[in-house]
Length: 379
Image 1 (cartoon, helix red, strand yellow):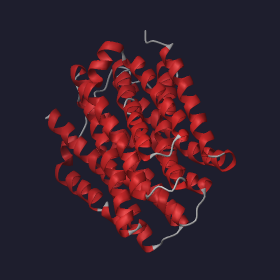
Image 2: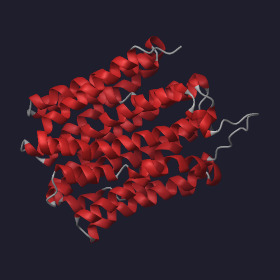
Image 3: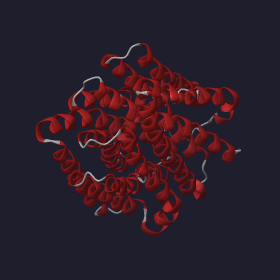
Image 4: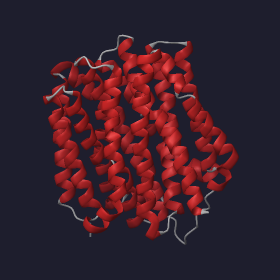
């Protein structure tokens, strides 16, 4: 039964994040088409993460009270609505509203599904299940941006959103028909840690800090690469293909991630991947060649693929299940703050100092985080 549940979770995630990764590209390029500058696009992109800041903690209590199924269905409805709105009202404010709804879909999907994978996994299966979770996420980076780029070139920005509309509708139908199997009954321990106890745990803060830096890399690269490609005169299809190259890297690492974790440990794997992301950010401004950018995007995919599964592995391996569930909410909150602030802040930096400065500042942040992670091995 557990294996069937995890398969259902992964199918749902594929439908969800194929839409999310594709629509992100469409919203960015649509905003540029509507006359937005890098700062305005940064605000719109950051708006997609506001829900992570506002609702990450309440989602913990909501999942325990109403169950995960209700949250996943609600999120998919938000996603479908966000795809339809710009069809009727095409303007920057409406794009912002759609971005906010997409953010709700993200927070109502990401945290509950991570909780389910952790809850349904035995200790000996945890690394494999989270690696499979990351593998599925990597496939969405391949399909979503590529479909978005081809659709924009073929039928335009707004109609391209409707290409993705069947995916959340199928996700809703799947949850209505099969979602009862995702019910989780948390065991009540003799002492249930409160949120303040979780916040007092230094392990939790370390995981949050590392995850937030990874979130910055995850957010900035797919946001600024379309801007960089647009400034270089690349077509939407080419930009989508370059971003999709990250999927091949994201797909390669989860296949060997359990072995890497056993050999080197989660923290060393995380440090190496942060360093690789830093190298990609540092080298990107030196080229406009689509093939070179595609190779760098591949390396970025290899580096970024570790953050979600490895931090979750550490949480469920080093913390109690209740604290691990708290951490998922706190991680989403920290990631949300990073993702809300990073695009507009770095968009402002780009408007003043150019896109190259953004890439180099991000590279320095990745390098510092990598060194800090490598010098703090787990006890």
